[in-house]
Image 1 (cartoon, rainbow, N blue to C red):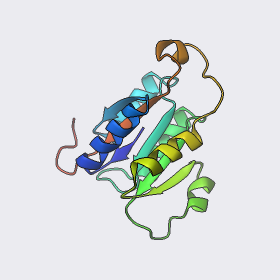
Image 2: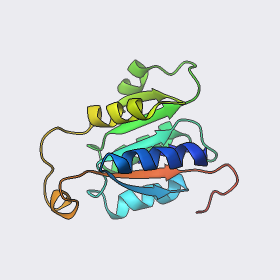
Image 3: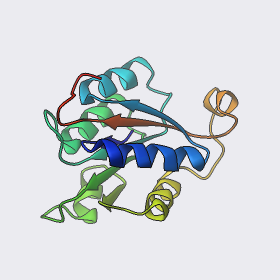
Image 4: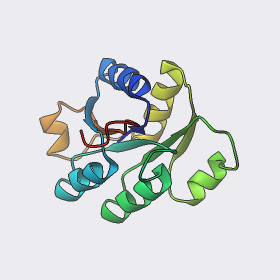
Length: 146
């Protein structure tokens, strides 16, 4: 899952991940992302979320998703280098902190770094031909509801 309040960055991230062979699902509302994981908790292999979004920040979103699916790796992206560090992100249960803007290479390395190296358990691997599915939550500043 990736959450970003900037549509252009989210679109670029989605295309980048799709070119790497990942299936990317997007949501424009963090609450809808939570519902997607609640209804299909084993579908998504990774969450990518922006730190700062209208309505719900990435830390709160990530915490709620970890309650539903404790094993899902979560990458936090932030354009602010403030007090949040990679160590603090890991203490909170997330896997990685990426600074924005980030290059396609940095995004790819972060995703490859947090996804398990072993083959995925069926039915995901059968359904996706072995590729992971990523839920990308795109939160737009003006369009919150899809």
